[in-house]
Length: 119
Image (cartoon, rainbow, N blue to C red; front, side, top):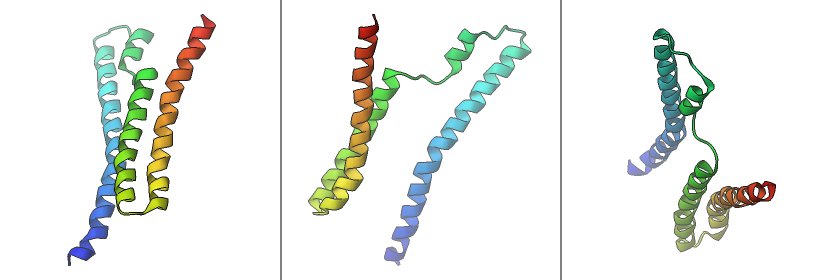
């Protein structure tokens, strides 16, 4: 009985991990639209500064956060697969997020150099 539940639970957890970020992004968009509607109903002038405050943040802070999340995901995955002696899977499932996280961190470093060279 319990062995039959393992794939079902795995699919449910994977589905939740994929769907929850989309749902949270949807809720953020709904809150943003509610704020814009309230501003319009009050007769407030909506300027570009107001819209930029309501938009998601981008830039080095977001890249750093994403890079660290990818690296934090890859380290335990790699370690657990190495313990079980599944070396190919460790490289595949742990190496890909590690490389993506490192790429995000390198974008920050080279972005700062490009800005410094322009000045």
